[in-house]
Image (cartoon, rainbow, N blue to C red; front, side, top):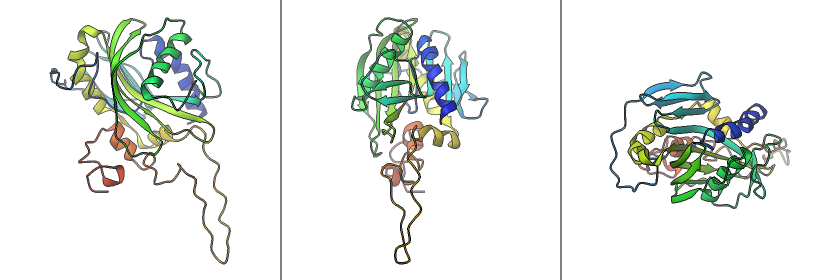
Length: 290
């Protein structure tokens, strides 16, 4: 992605955190707000107006009365009339190292966090990093629910979370799905999510709308491939050496063309949130393979 994308992401850290978003990434959630229970009844989702980013990198549905405030390089940010914000498609390049809140971006890397941390710890650190970078107080992240997304992808963490934090504009409830991708050969990895936030008083009633927006998000295949590629690509394998008339290409663990991140399963299972019965078997589901 890499230099151009990295510069965009680095500049996005401060501006989007300052707007109260903090981050976004791939994935989808059916919950938004202050951790309503699975049985909470919500209003029906509205009809969404189709939106496509000017660079054709992504598209999503926009609820009535909402405005698109960003649309480029797979990122779509929507602002609602009552202080709601939905962020789709942001990706952060992370150095696998000790956390340093407020650390300036460098070399296309947005911040440092240990890959061994849990997803909820990573989300909390990302919020703290954004607050520190903007001179804001601790965002007081509270995780109300943290549910792993069952995926068969090697070295990939994905999960759904709900909770609350203090944004620039005040208290907010949130719902998200967050994914942490494998550490690459250069010691970096990517963190992605979709994030919905709203003032606590209206968070529960916005659940259906947030779910509809999340489900409407799509990324152009070429951009998705770049988005999911490692920040530091492995060196190309050497040419096969003929031994007795034959030879073979050495394999590189984690970079096989059959890796689910690269063969479309990530798009189906995480971005599109296909139910298990529709997921093909090659993606860990019960449906037929293509």
